[in-house]
Image 1 (cartoon, rainbow, N blue to C red):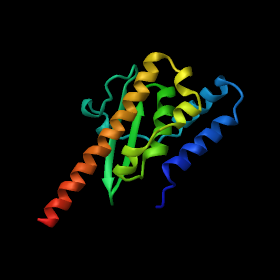
Image 2: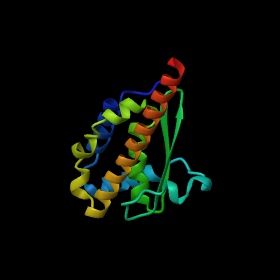
Image 3: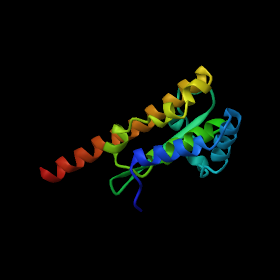
Image 4: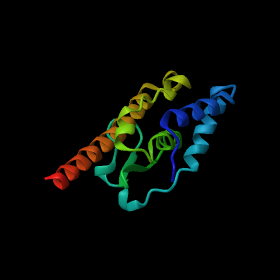
Length: 151
C-alpha cells in the first residue's frame, strides 16, 4: 500500500479543518474521527502501552512491517481518540526515518494547541513523543539487523 507523504496528509487535515467555521464544529469532527478509530484489542491495553502524561487513559502500540511503522491506539475519552486518530493518519505506514523527521506542523496550522486545555496539550505532545520513540526504536533495530547482515 502506497502511503502519501506526511506533509501531504497534514495538508489534507488542514483543509478538512478549514471547512468548519467554529471550534465547536471542529470538536465534533474530532470526536467523529475518534468514533471511527479502529478498535484496539484488549491484549494491547496494558500498562506498558499506556501513555504517561495524558489526563485520559491512552494506549498506543506499534508494529514494524516491511520497513514501515504502523500504529494502533485507544482511549477512554472521545476527544482524545479523535486526536490520536489524526496522529495515526499522519504517521502510520511510514518509515521510522520519515516519522522521526515529521514536523507535525498541522497541529499549529489548525490552531489545536490554543484550543486544548493545558493537560490535553501535554497529552497530545506525549502521544507524539511516544510515536517517535517507537520509530526510533524500530530504526535502531533495523540498523542492528543491517549491521548483523553486513558482519
